[in-house]
Amino acid sequence: ALSTGELARVLDCALRCFPGAREFTVEAGRPDTLSEDKLRLLRDAGATRVSLNPQTMNDETLRRVGRDHTAADIERVYGRMREMGFADINMDLILALPGETADDVARTLERVARLAPDNLTVHTLALKRAAALRFTDYAADEAAAQRMVDLAAGAAAAMGLAPYYLYRQKYMAGNLENVGYCRPGMASLYNIDIMEEIAPIAAFGAGAISKWLYPAARRIERAPNLKSVEQYIARVDEMAERKRALWAPRGTKEERA
Image (cartoon, rainbow, N blue to C red; front, side, top):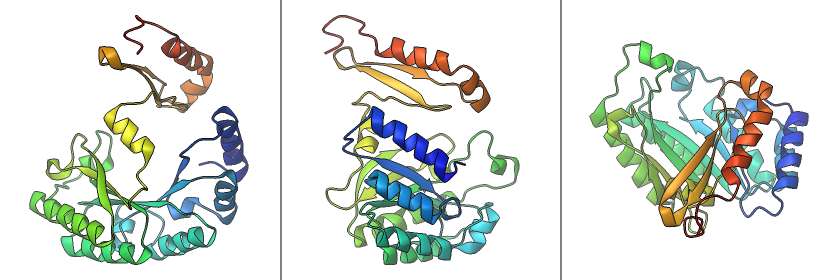
């Protein structure tokens, strides 16, 4: 959604506020949202980890779910990322997409394996309440979804990737899970922190949720931002104040330990 210039402003602000970040991940998303200028900007800003999301490498499925890119676009952009020196690339896949079979997933995994990403995040389709698919006759085949998860686990192992985090969401096909795989030493610190809830989070933007931990009391407090972009902009001072209140020293010394 951002132009190159707008993205540059966001990165400049983030890097000034959080200098020397040990991990710096950018959700690059779909290849049709990227450009040579944006990739160069991310590289020059020092991004340590970039996520490129094919979801599937089957063009027919991509058209069915309303994506404008193709598998060839993914391969082209991925290759350019490597040429530009990105050393830690994550790829997201989604299993149990409408019309996909286990054979389709196997073909996707074969093409992904040839690219050799450093991280692979395998999601099982979760139908959110407002998802268009919830208003169709789509129903996940639970046995097929389990087969897809098994195929992904085997393919990840063959690529030298080990599982390091797992989480579940509501309305997931077959009540399965999302699993993150990575090469040795390339686990995302943020993914670990957020799943284990062992670190405070400063979150900015519409819908983002900041967190503060009280480990001794085994308590977490949150400060959510408004989801509406228009309301977030109109009430941004209020959102900032929520964070100040969240991070102000509170509780006993023991609770804050």
